[in-house]
Image (tube, rainbow, N blue to C red; front, top):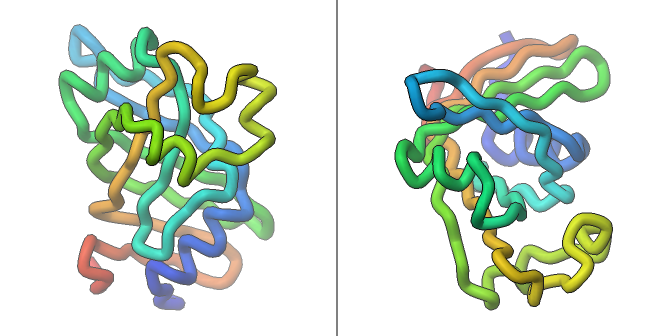
Length: 143
């Protein structure tokens, strides 16, 4: 087994534009939707996603912040990240994480009405791939 650090995993995650964000919905079901991380992945495992405040995903997260992100990359690399999400509404945070490619979904940029930023902080990350598999918990130690 090849052990990786949060930094190693963040570098791999940054190369994968689309992931699936899974949340618990009403009725105790699982909802999943594709999200773009715009290569905005901190070395501490925090991921950021833009969406609108009137989506089911935002309601799900407000009711239960526990989420899962799944990534599939090159060379059979796969990653499942379990963590807590929070809904951020500050425009300063929008500007910090905004990239021009987001204009295709949010034509008015950070001024888009109802825009929110989802911040997902990793608690546990499992990964698999041609160069090994393993698991990290929040403090970066093997689970």
